[in-house]
Image (cartoon, rainbow, N blue to C red; front, side, top):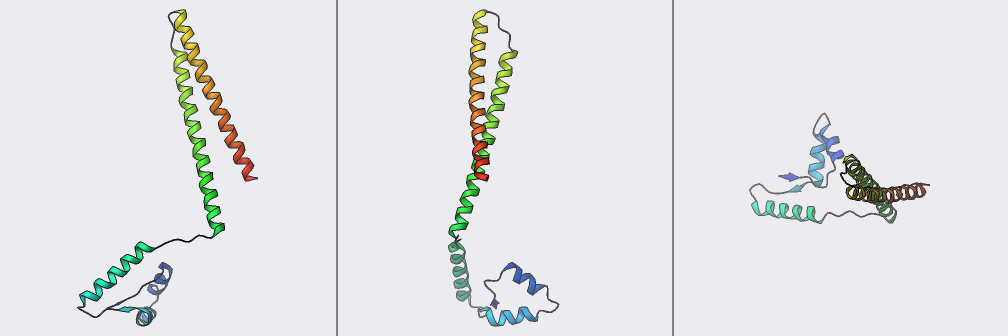
Length: 143
């Protein structure tokens, strides 16, 4: 049996799209690995080598490629930070609306509600400022 190795998907598609199998047969004869029929040890060795090659696959990036990848990761983190802040603001706004809907029976309860509402509004303001700062930094880095 002959086995072809290091064959790209594009090359395989090209070979199999041919009207005859001549190109595939030639490539198999010249570049294929021959394992005699019934030789279980040679087949096992081949499989072991292929498995070790699959585990050893690595990706090497140039310095420019690594910098671009790092920049992309940083942009995604900024976007996720923005989304987290927006979600937190929405949660706080819902909480604020619930507090404002509640009716206070006494002056103490009304005072406590006002304090809670003020604290939530301060949190919303701080988060809004953080969001604006993130967006400003993002627009400055894109310029």
